[in-house]
Structure formats: structure tokens, C-alpha cells
Length: 114
Length: 113
Image 1 (cartoon, rainbow over the protein chains, first blue to last red):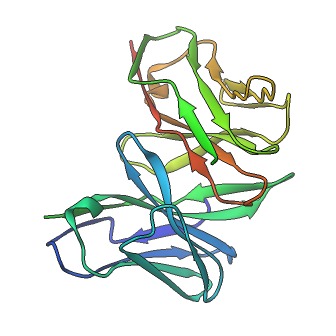
Image 2 (image 1 turned 90 degrees about the vertical axis):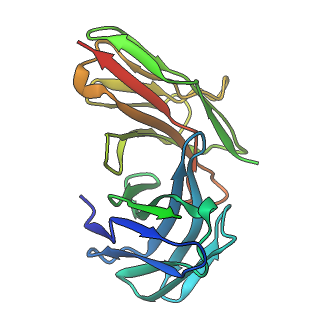
């Protein structure tokens, strides 16, 4: 258990509304990630962070923004939700392990945009 | 670009059967390779990994060998149990972009008693 929590765990929202998902970690990990999971696509990286106020885009970043003002919190915002953003969102951290790194995932947030 | 391809699912087996889930990858250099498992309603759990050619990762009776010559990392288990029913993801960490995983599409496995 890498001490990762996500909130909310489930959310239903309407098209055009803003939505913020929160990822919280308790073990001072430097790297944090947001992925989305969709059938037939596995997990795809949205954004990631390599430190406080240091973030970068992943492969599917359009329509999403992130912020990291504290080491323990990484926020994902959908400025104006669309139905194509209905998905399960996973937060992850990365920690060194032997040669290389390992990523550990939170429990996920199921978002439905109606 | 970097990519991972897994065998199409779903896969359905009987208890105690032998399991193979194929995974091949495309990447420059020597990526690290991973298998993750996702049980219903849960997040992903790291199952095993390998960081260089010919390494064998193993955990909970599952094994996978990093084959550079065939760019493969197939997951195997000699005798599956009902509790192994889950979705399995193969992933790679490209050497040029540390700590950013690229996932395959996932393979759903169902084990019948």
C-alpha cells in the first residue's frame, strides 16, 4: 500500500460543468501521475508531476489541467466536462526499487458525464 | 513511438489450466517491463517486473521473461485458480523517459471452477 487515496470515488456530472479530482499521498513521493482507463485502451497518461508546481503533459492531456501546490496533493481538473471524459481515473506515484522505479496506483475515481 | 500489444481477450480457462498471456512491445533501447493485475472494482497492482534482457520476474506463481530478441514479455502460470480472475496489463517504461508507463490494452481472464 503506497498510501494513495482518491476523492471522490464516484461522481456523476453534467456536460459543461467543471470537475476536480483529488489525489492524496502520505509518503512524500516526488512523482505523481494521472491516468484514464477506457475499454480497449488500457491506461493512458493524462498529466504527471515531478515536484511541487512542476507538471507536464501526457498523451491525452487535451481538456484537462493539473495543479500541485503541495507534495501530497495532485489535482486533476476538467474545466468543462464532456461525455468523452466519462472514464475511470487513476492516480499513481513512482518510487525507486532496486534498478529502476515502480508505480503504485490509487483505487480510482469513476466519473460519468451526462 | 513506444507501444505495447497484448493478446486479445477475454480469456476463459478452467481451474488448474496452464495460462499464457502474450505481450509484445516496441521501444528504443532497453525499457523496463511490467505486469499489473486489476481485480474487479480495484486499482492496479504491480504483479512482477523485469529490468533487463533475460531477466525473469515472478510473483504469486506467475512468471514472465524479458526476451529482447523477440521483444516479448509473456505472462505464464502453471496452474490457475478462480482467484486469478482479473484483468492483466502489460506495460513498459521507456529508458529515454523515466517513470512514464506505456500500457497495453489489457486482457480479461476468467477462471471457471
